Each structure stands twice: as C-alpha cells, then as structure tokens.
Length: 207
Image (spheres, rainbow, N blue to C red):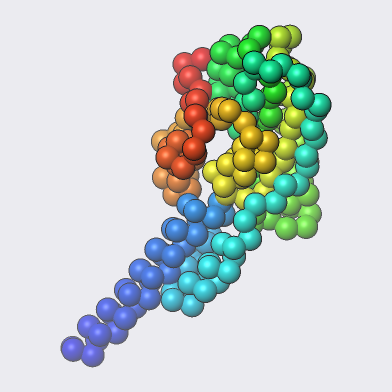
C-alpha cells in the first residue's frame, strides 16, 4: 500500500509540474493552442526546458505598412490593438470617438499566434492583413491615415514592442471577455494595463 501511494504521488507531481508549466507557457507566451496543456501533462518536468526555449522566441513583425507622420505636433500617437472581434471593434470605435481631430498618428496592430508555421501561419497572417485593411477602409474622415502591423507573438508583448518601436502616447484595446478561453489564455487587457508604462484606454463594452 505504501509503494502504491508513492506511485500516485509521483504521478500527481509529474502532472502538476507539466500543467503549471503549460499554464505559464500559454498565458505568458501567447501560445493559443490548448493542446499545450495535454503536452505539459504528458511530458511533466521534461516540458520545462522545452517551454523555456520556446518562450525565448519573442515577437516577430510579419507585415509592417507605415504611413508618413501626419506632422501634427500637438496630436497624440495612438496604437489600437485589433483581433477582428466585436470587442476590439468597439475599442476602435472608442478610439475614433475620442480621438477624431486630435490624433497625430494612428497605428493599427493585429497579433497572430506564434504556434503556427508554414501554410497555417501564412493563412492567419493573410486573415489578419485582410482584417486590418477592412478596418482602415471603414475609418471616418478626421483621423490620420493609419500605419498597420501584423505581429506574431504574445499579444501583450507584441503590442508593447510596437508601442516602444513607434513611441506612441496611448494604447487602445478591447476589454477581455469572460469565457473559458480567456481564463486559460490570460486577460490581455488586464496584463497590458499592469505592464505598460504608457496610458491604456479600454474600449467601451456598450459602444
């Protein structure tokens, strides 16, 4: 009986180490495929060095289309994070309402998954590009012609990297939802607010 308990404890410790590592890997690394939890549970402690190595990949700017600066010396440089969801569209509308006539430069950013490679990665990049082009086409007069970027990586890391590269004054994102995916992937808006050294405006859920 004693040996059986030791076996049970060893199995539980193996699973716990793997699952905790997977949770950190998913929430901090932007790896959206929840099969990483299965991989973590199966590999246990073996998954730790794999997660550390994969976590060093950082962000990758996939598609950058920059507009010349507007020349407005008194205007804000604003970054809006978009993912094609209704929530991020509300964030964009919030930015439009608040900043029309006052924004000096506008950057729209879409973040894609670092898990995808080859054909799948290219397809997601194309979807992100189409989404950004559609949002740009729908912008009203009174806003500067925006620059756009598609970036692969963790959403918060990617947005902060672009914000630093472009030295923006304000970041605008949608508020996170409350579903299972959000709990497992992490609250992007909350983490961005805590980590950003720049002001963050959360899109109005009602708008």
